[in-house]
Image (tube, rainbow, N blue to C red; front, top):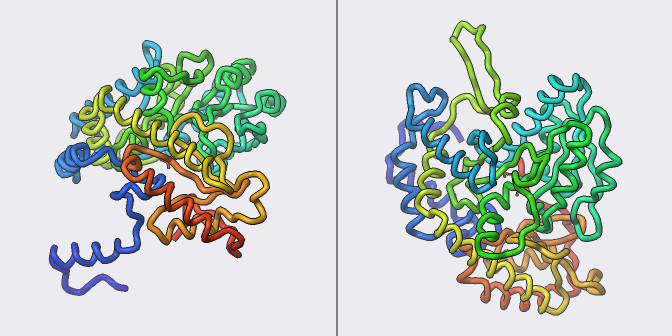
Length: 417
Ligand SMILES: *Cc1c(COP(=O)(O)O)cnc(C)c1O
């Protein structure tokens, strides 16, 4: 495939792209448990309007685009309120959860270098913590000390306490963690970090725009935000259950003082003064503007409504899975994430990866994960209208695949091609 000699028309382009999408998951129909989160046609129209306005703009230099400075500052301030950030809490928008995590790890490393002269840094994370922490360790030269979780999939505080050393720059917990959807014991973990002067990160990439609204709706939510002493940074993804288009997350620091360790400033280049909050140079305005637009369109009321729907749907799914002979869920999911697995005694007869294929043939998409073998679901409001159809198909598919073992045991959270 080479670049066409003569350019294609708009109609040809649209047709070609449409046909390229033929095999893509059908998230628009609520049949995908993850990756795209749909707040409905009105919120989509709002995002489209903002996207069209800001498609070409660049937040690299907010002196040229003061609108984008305001957009970032509004999104960060609104998120700080949701996370119960104290007076002076400060953050930035990033391109996603991974970049927020990268920045939190980098800030922790710099803080430990400045305050504690740590030169051979490590971080202590539960094995449930997102792969982005391993990526951060790889990028930034930080040893990752990975600690087994408890039988209920929550981080093991004693084991984490045993794993920290004088060179630990960061301890991590998640609210909720991605694989099984449980909330780690954040106060106890943050105390481990505080006891050695290290930073503590709550990964609320998933929970950041869910748990605050669950609390408002009267659910009991385990402590996880800045009300917990010792939490120094929190990541919260607007492009997940904030229902904004991709490319928008917030990394929040407890104070501006701590945020300093995140930024990069360089004033000795022929091109001029260079100050940068995150990994990017050129920063697309589209995700920032659409995040601002969707957040302000939904407001607290909108998010409460969407959260009520997602949590009701997730609980219906948990109950429905448990009521399906041969299946159960891992642990006790606390919010909108869950993992479907073979019930005790069914492991040898029911292969959930084969089940995943059978569901996929009917248009339902789950990520496969292990260990243990399970089908992951991030449930959001868009899945609500079809959840009973899903549960009916699930029961039928169990019937079809019982006794079938799939050769290929690979999992597929993220891919290279
Ligand atoms: C999605 C997710 C991330 C990574 O975020 P991206 O936006 O995919 O880069 C990190 N932590 C948790 C808990 C997540 O669910």
